[in-house]
Length: 223
Image (cartoon, rainbow, N blue to C red; front, top):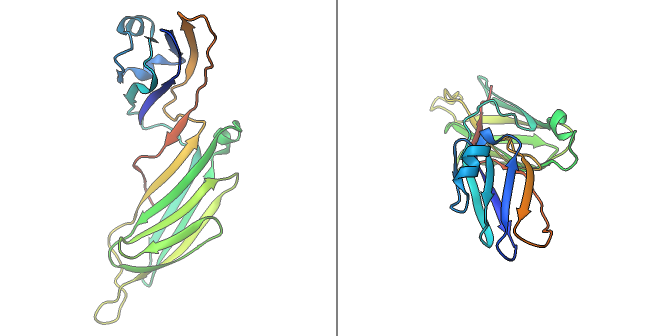
């Protein structure tokens, strides 16, 4: 997981901010903005800083934990039979995660299936979103959009190219799949803010926090 803590500061004067995380150990492998004081972080695990004006990256981090759980279920299967290939993809929200937080939702969900070069066409069926075949790039693109509170499905048939003898050429390569998505209200890194204390100013500023998870290169295996 490649993540960051972004700050948008619109404070007047010279405020002194102290940001406390619920689990600061998650930021052990992190790079901090030059305004962050190293001593409070190393001693107490607290991000103490005087923010510059506007947007800036307070911290960027990299987590190598492969056990991170996404808030959706994905099951994909592409089977190459002797006469044609069959595609069966199912996507649905993980209700144990999404169902407990009405502020969380999954949006801009896309499924891109890269097919072998010997696939010449695909017949696709879905009742949710749009699915299309790109013959130039040999990919199936399923644009889902928002993933609601039920499982949705894509089914399809892959057509093979023909040999000089007129027989279908069954691909030996496997299809691969990449997902795109945007999850509002969730940080899969597990990093959560605990408190933001303000010192050095006489007013009470507005404080808010938004969590977002966005897919970079998220590849999944197809059975």
